[in-house]
Image (tube, rainbow over all chains, first blue to last red; front, side):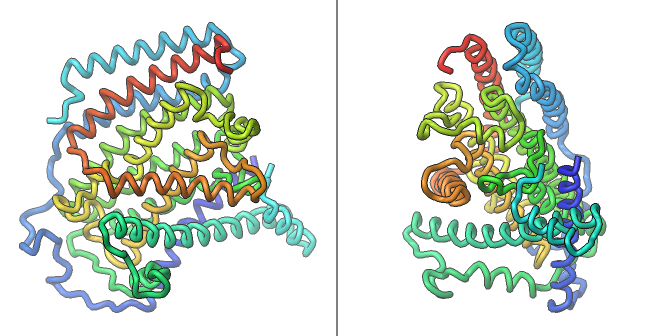
Length: 117
Length: 348
């Protein structure tokens, strides 16, 4: 398990290095804020309202489809690794699994969920 | 276990000075983490310069010329400038989200380097789930882009962040399935095992030469990887002409620099994965293994750079439909057929 210690240390070191560069930059950079400078950029106009608005739900639909297929990919990883030892049974199983999901994809396709409107 | 010779040397050195077991390992890994960061910074500085020279020459310009021989230290001076630049924090931002977005973006890109083999024994830790781990950690980039878009409270940034998330998650699926095809060939998730499986027989053991599945997997992988790295023709999130710069429009100084660094680190990551999965990793004759690895990786990066400067940008609806209606069915069909061929024992 000591290999996974490397991952933990990389997370801590990565955050630490980034925060250190922010800190170092803070020591040498100017700091001169005023109200106009701190406005949102909106092509030099005064910003109109907040940006935190209700957003088009097509992003949400693609998010849902993605979750289905990403979970499927997770199931496929152990299959792909062990495939050499498992033989025909595993192949048929996985073909059935993929076909069911492909059917789902074509259903979403026909329902227009894959259309970016 | 740990393969990195520097790690073992440092570990033994610390042990000999009487530092106990957990600390000697932690300090050694910390040293490696800093070394990897330094290497990545230098690589990113070089890649930015290289990309600007290529862009210049494609457009019949010279690119940077004034700072040193062919402008070789231009990007170093750019980094120094960014370090001294004022950090403009817009008043209406979401403070915590705005601050942590560049950190998450960089760390997500940086974590992949735990398992990328730069050469024979030149790997930080050979995790047995290697490639799955890379897919897992690089997905955090999506969260950082959404954080940057939302935290900025800017309409361009929000639109860029949302588009970016939609695009990256859509191309994640074909990318993972093309990688699965290689795993069926190699029978392992470890990056070292995958590279070793392609050893010998000059270059014809490379997985790209497993016709026709290797080449199809490579083409779908490189397409999806271009989209994952947010590069033209899939640079909808940035789309200078419509969104000014997308998710990072409100960032300046070091925070912007972290997004920029992460972008080029990601470019190197996807190319390094392509080399390990399809082009035999570090294996090659005569030259040291890390030189072979860098040569092959730079060749793939050159390909991605040529894509960027020669292809026009796709429209957002074409981009999404290309992923779901073409790449996903194609990669799944390729995977099933590759599995069948492997089972039947044809070709291999």
